[in-house]
Amino acid sequence: MLLRHAQSTPHSGPTAAALDEGLSAWFGAGAGLALGSALCALWVRRGSRTFSGLFAGIVAYIVVLAPLLVLSRPSDMTASEAVGDAAFFLVPAAIFAALGATVGSFAATILMTHGRDLKQ
Image (cartoon, rainbow, N blue to C red):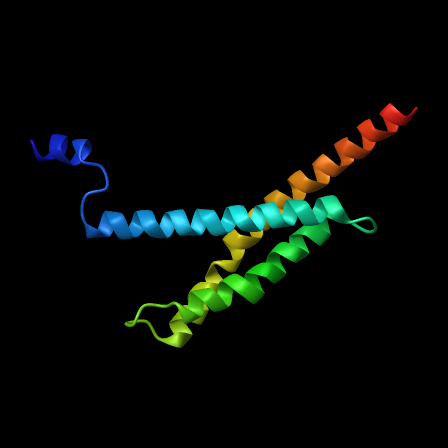
């Protein structure tokens, strides 16, 4: 009976709500990093597009998201713990940035190839 109730009531309780909110915020930030990295990779004219997009995504995390994680920490968390969490989340943020940079670089290559085909 309890199992059926647990399966039929999604997002019940404060823990589920907190996890849902945190996961949604994290994937939103990751999507923003991926989109920014992709756009940077599209707009780069010289050098490695993928590296430029990845670099832009990591810099965005370090300059914007990591300080936000530290400044908006819960009251029961020390600043050093928040900095450790921000350092820990650098790896997943870099994965989102690498994904976006790769997609942006691939899209730029496709656009450049098709653009040359149309001009000829």
